[in-house]
Image (cartoon, rainbow, N blue to C red; front, side, top):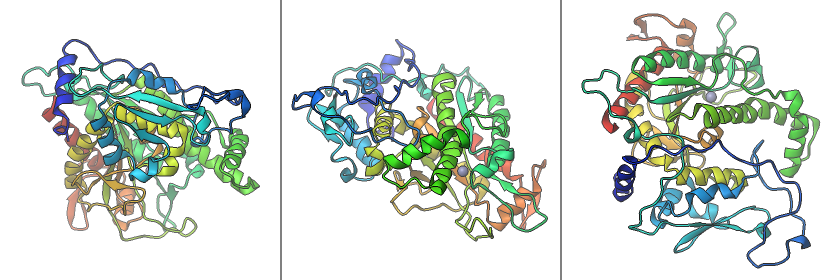
Length: 445
Ligand SMILES: [Zn+2]
């Protein structure tokens, strides 16, 4: 992976001796402009002659300010841009054909997908052999970090790691569907509380290895201040924009998803991008096999996979804010860090969890290397956290063994589970990640 653009990395290494990482001043999206005023179009016609439709944006997204890309002019070659877009980000060339046009010396990006009159953003490529400025980004690669002391026992010294315990817990679990109970006298499985348990173990263990660990949430309480009640009007607007009939029940389910998913994750994104500004982020989740929400039951599959950001559909690339976020990930070269981090962590994680890999069929997840534990998928958190993100999906919570291990809770040492001595499930999860991070930083620092 790192070998694909040796020229690029040599240039960066040389430049790093002279300058430290450039801080990206927050995540400066502007508020949606509701007026019809747009910039001059390519044909040069009078912009006052028409009124623009409301921009097509993701749920609770904001209209992007395309001038953010000005800082990335002449920072990427045509060869590298095309490679990243086609190899990891777009599911196929078809998905972006009307939105992104690659020319010899530049790429043209449609500013408003449902209104071509708003014009194209013109991003110039770096010419081969030319030195370029560092792409603005707040995160540091392992090679950007200070060298370790000889014989250091703290391989993660100085690394800033954000941990995002997926979902929410406590009385808030009812707002998403990641909780269930099978059998009367059992403890309810609550993904948002289980991920927080793993996050706290990781916070302790990674700190001992020298990392500065920052959690996006420390309690079961939501990070967002929005609530289902405050999002009703927003939900109605969104449904109308998506040409759906805003019935009472649809508004209610949309407002619920807006609260528990969109608003919550976007607020954590603001925290990550504006105040934590970590070198990498770990999104912790537990998986589950499809089952009836009303009558939960045990299912046989149990598996493991790790996700990096990628695999955008045409519909996603057509969202103006999503298109901008995808481009920023390409321009910041997040891919190289994500794929190697995920690759390194996946192996000790499989050793710890003893789980087989999960396979996507190529629609919402796609293979990006020859490791069948690592896949690319476009999720809100791994898109809006503007740094390398590894998203974890081990253990199916509705597999009987996993459910039993959740009932056992945290314990010290090993206990026999189906004939094998195992750590508690949370420590096992955390140990896989810790071992992988140590391997990654020892190798690359
Ligand atoms: Zn989850």
